[in-house]
Length: 315
Image 1 (cartoon, rainbow, N blue to C red):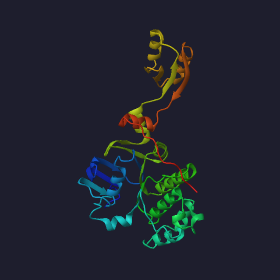
Image 2: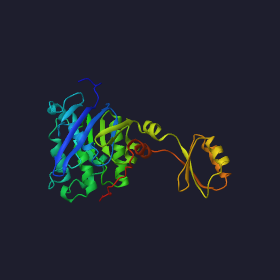
Image 3: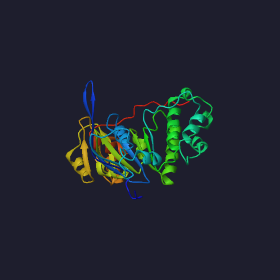
Image 4: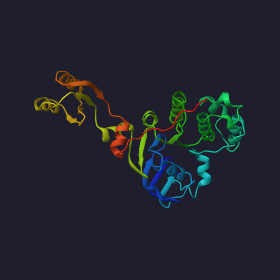
């Protein structure tokens, strides 16, 4: 396939799981395209369909219907070729627990003709100090970094990571982001799933908002924010009702909303003028400027808030 083939293509992909509690529509028409040489984030809560989608792209799961293409290839028919070009770190990765970290990296390296140097990967993810430690004695966060390292050993064209920062403390997480950014800059395509707004904003060139088995919107973080959340707003509180005259003055600058609890927001690009006017308006206090975030865009796109639920667990 040519270099112009998208890294991933899913077209109207559907997947139903039959469980003791009934059927689950894991994917309900997932459609998206991820271009090469970028970092793409699948953003959504647990159960949204992120893991199922990613596992289908390497043939670990089979769609009930629809089309899946990875680097232009059908993962059900080209697993051997894709295994040489694509690596995945599954969310529930299982490794040989009684090997030492160094032994495990050496074993993984032996599977490939041209592996990435294990020492380089260990150093970049700050795992070198664990090289003599048994895998079973690693903390959850360190094991997660090891799973990412194992995916990197093959030096893939496409690196797929399912919740790679789960369990990482802030320092380890930022280190991982820096490493992934470096891999992207040298040409590797990276696709990751996350429920962290911070991660998607800091790392991703494009974001796929995934909700209830569908991709409901996609774009750069900036495009999604502009599309769903708009521009900045001046926020303030009211000690009483605004007079019609004062409300009219504020509305001349932008879109004014006042909640029943008297928390107000004035969406406007003329924030300096708004702050001056509000400071002169009786009954207005706690003035501030709210810059829209990816979280605001996610809420507008899906109708729900997305919060991270994992706790860092590092050595």
